[in-house]
Length: 214
Image 1 (cartoon, rainbow, N blue to C red):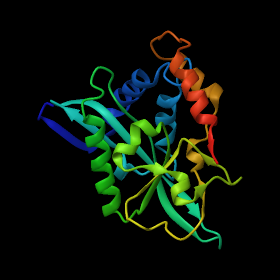
Image 2 (cartoon, helix red, strand yellow):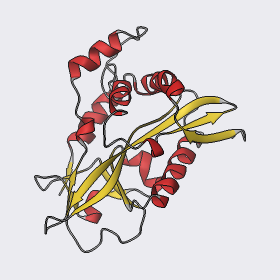
Image 3 (cartoon, helix red, strand yellow):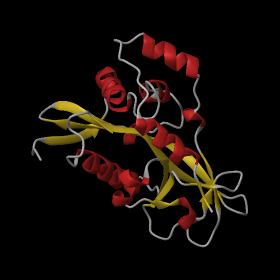
Image 4 (cartoon, rainbow, N blue to C red):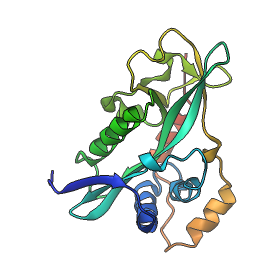
């Protein structure tokens, strides 16, 4: 791994470059095309967005990765709320993936989040990508959706060990993640064209995203 690595907060001047990296990283990964770059574009002004945890990774002075966080909530059986975090999108530029840069970016964000007083993170993602970073099944921590289900793709990381123990929790994602699909398509159409493809990895994502733990 190259040694000239800097992790710092995203600047306004980074926005377009970061959105391009996100687009390149996610295009055709989960669906033909992608919406993650539009989500990054739309999420920054939302009150749940945390600019302190909006980080980029520079390699030799060039931005090659990004992670963004929003506030989210857990609610226990008594109705008491606990403020936690959700991250996404998170990505490294294609061609530089699987070299440890994503790990560095996530671990630095975990350190900063913990220093800010946050005790847990809940995300949706492929377990293969995140269990090595300390994420576990949501069912292990009794974190479920409003309907009581435990999605296989919902993962939990305790920044403060034991902070979720002894209770059952409902996860409530920030409304920052709700966006207009038509507007996302218009946004993508305004950018340099990329070919939308149907790939086997999208079928795998559909299976994982609909699976629940019993």
